[in-house]
Amino acid sequence: MSKVIVVASGKGGTGKTTVCAGLAVALAKNNQKVLIMDCDSGMRGVDMVLGISDKLVYDISDIVSGGCEYSDAVYRVSPDLQLFCVAAPLYADDEVSPSLIKEFVAKARKDYDYILIDSPAGTGSGFVSAAASADRALVVINTEPISIRGCKNIKARLDELRITDQRLVINRFDKERFYQMALYEDLDAVIDEAGMRLIGLIPEDVRVIALSQRGALTGNWSKTGMIFDAMARRLQGADVPIIVK
Picture (tube, rainbow, N blue to C red):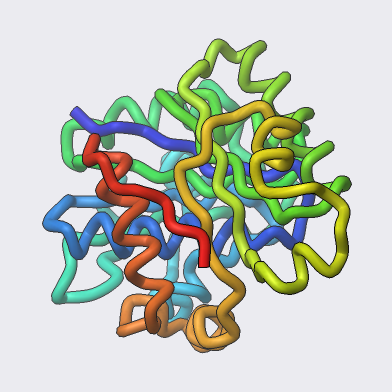
């Protein structure tokens, strides 16, 4: 039975999609069978980050509307990994309802070890649809007050949805810039204000951004790949320390 994780952020631009895709790749490299679902209707990007845009014919709206079979819209990302993707609709008007997302996830659970759901930024109807079937949530932030305010909004919505297993991912962290900006005394202050336990601290790495924009994230994506691997192992219950560099 799959573990279903929604990856969310309170505002756009945190790097949520790259985090979701990078974690999916790391889990697959750790011999897990992984499905990544893009639920960001109208802003879909998972297919681009994973380099499968040219393969796409169907998306999740085609499945739930009966326009195609379940298997037709599930695309294997790489022949070397047990990593699969379902794309979001290209247009926001085709957003899929929470009940239909639940129906799809219920069918997919038996086939995968992990299902990662890339949620739209914010707390609107798209987020509710994406989170409807989740067992746990990862909330991606940057170390900025606006991002952390968004995280608090997401946390409140997750609490309403009774998704109590919530973890924080700090993305694009630059230690020197963090202390130069002096918005927070230290990382503990950020974590305390966000109100969630930290599961990942991902450094600013232009190579990861470049690889994701080229659709090459399944390749060797530098030392940051080790951070994603550590996050994947934490998700699986391993006691892996978080190191600030």
